[in-house]
Image (cartoon, rainbow over the protein chains, first blue to last red):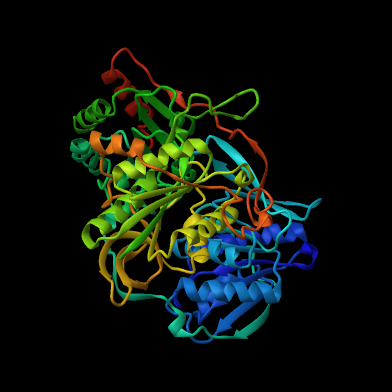
Length: 330
Length: 264
C-alpha cells in the first residue's frame, strides 16, 4: 500500500436529523488543528439529511469539505449499512484518517469497517499528534488501567481509523472556512440489514440524572456499601447537588448508567465535587478534568484519586460522610 | 441444536500491576493472570441460554500455554468444550490479527449460531474485538445487551434488550449473531468443588499456526497487525492535593468545611 496516495482527514458526523452529537463537533475542532499541522484538508462526512442550523455548527468548526451521503437504507443507523458505506467511501476517496465519535454506534461500526478494509483501528486516544517525519498520526492513550500511556500508530496501512470518546476534546470552533460540498447518491439494500429495531423507549427526563449542569456532585466509588447509599444521597441533597458514581457502582446495579462519571459516561464540570471511595482510574478521572474543587476521601493513602484532588482525607468514607452530614446540618 | 461460541482472554489483574519508576515498564512478576471480567458475564449469558434451550458452549482463547487456566475456569462454570490457540507466531497481535486467528480456528469446530465476547478486556481495553469478530464471522452484531429476551430457533433469530446512551432498544437480529452483554443481569456463577475438579481433568483442544489449515502467515501475529506501539511512558500525574489530617476525623471535617466556605 502506498500510504502517500491517501490524503485528508475525515470526521464522521453522528446525528439524528435534528441535532449533531457533541462528540462529532469536538472531533471536527480537534482534527481541524491536526489537519492544519499535516497540511491536509478536513472533511465532515454526513449521512442523511441534517437540519440547516446544525450543518452551520459543523461548518463553524472550519471544515474544508462536506461529503453528504443521500439515499435509502441509512436511517435508522445499522452496523451492516454503515460498515459497508465507510468501506466503499474509504476505498474510493482514500482519506488518510477517519475519526469516529466513541458513542455506542461509533464503537460498533468503526472497528468493523476497519476490519473489512482492512486497516488499523485505535480507540480512546486522549491526545493526537501528527509526526511529520513518518506522516503518521500518534494516537496517545492510557493503557493497562491508566498505569501507563501508550503511543499507537498505524505505520503502513491507510486510513488510520480512530474512535474518540465524548468529552475528550473541547468544542472550540474557529469559524467557517471556504467549504466545498460533495454529494454521494447511494443506498443500502434493506434486506441486508440483519438487526431490526423493534422499539425504542427513551429514558425518562429526570433532572436528578443530568450531571452535566450540576454545581455540586457527590461521587461514590466501588468501595461503597450498598446499604450506605442513602447517606450519600442525603449529603448530595444537603449540598444542593447530585449523586454520581464510577462505572463499577453501575455494574453492581446500584445506580443508573446516567450517573457514571468518566470516559464511558458523563463528563462533568461542577464547582465542587466530593469523591468517596474512588480509586482514581484514568477512565474515571478524565470525566473530572473540568471540575472546580475536588475533595477525595479514601482509606488507601496511595489512591491515585488524591493526585487529582485539591483536598484529600485518608479515612473511612462512611464516617467522613456522617461527619459532613452532622456538621453541615448543625 | 444451538451452538454457542464464547471468545475469552486471560489478562493480568491490572489493578495489581505496578510500573517500574526507573524504566517506566510494567512489572508483571507476581501479578496473577485472571479470566477477563467481562468475559465471565459473556460466558454466563451463554450458559444460561444453553440451560434454557439446550445446545453446547465452546470457549476459545488465543494466548500462551498458561491461558489454559482461564479455559478451565470456563469449563468449571459450565462450558462443554475449550480450545486454546497458542503459538509464538501469534504473539504481538492486535485485534485485527487476533480476530482473524480466532475466526479461522472456529471454522474447524463447526458452525456457530451465536458468538459471545466480553465488552472489553481489562488490559488492552480497546473494545474492538466484538465488532471485528462479528466481521470475521460475517455475523449480525448486538452490543450493550442488558437482557436476552427470546431465541427463535425456527426463524434463527435472537431478540435482546440493549441499553443505549439515551434509552432502551429492543432489537431482533438474525443468526449468526455476535453479542456483548452488560454486567448487571449476567453475574457469573461460582462453580462448586466437583465442577472445579472435573475441569482440571477435562481435555483442552489445542491448535497452533501449523494445525489451522490455510492460515495466512502475513495475517497473524506482528506482521498481521496494522497497529503498532512504538513507545510507552508513565502518565504525568500532578502532585497530590493538600492532605488534611487533624487529631480526629471530626476536626479534619471541620477544617475541610472551613476551607470550602467560599465554594459552598
